[in-house]
Image (cartoon, rainbow, N blue to C red; front, side, top):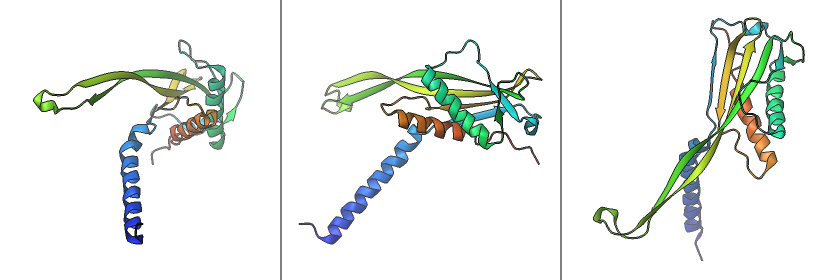
Length: 185
């Protein structure tokens, strides 16, 4: 039977180990968000937006398409923008998405020290899909792109549709956090 002190020490060590693993693995799983905008654009004049399809891009299935649009619509509504179907919208909004494939090599040693040439190693590769979402805002009057944001590790479907939607909503909220850009003082 463990004494109270030993049990407390083991619990502390387990908590510390979990904390250290989360620190090391957290950045690897985090979504990376970047944005850029056209300098000198007066974003305060934009009050309405319309969804447009960006040509020559691959769109996901209809379910993911609607999930992306709902996530963006929700964030834009909180910023005071109104969705419209009118050609006279102040902004056109479109998105692109890509699933990039990266190779990951997993190797392990099957006995023997490497430096002495002993043992046997085996390496396997696997493909990792990293979903990237890019959201673009166009000024139709000026016919130019005025804002673009990208979020990586956003479109990576799991077995749980609810979890997928939560991940997408979180990424879009993070992506549009700084939209519209604040004017310089």
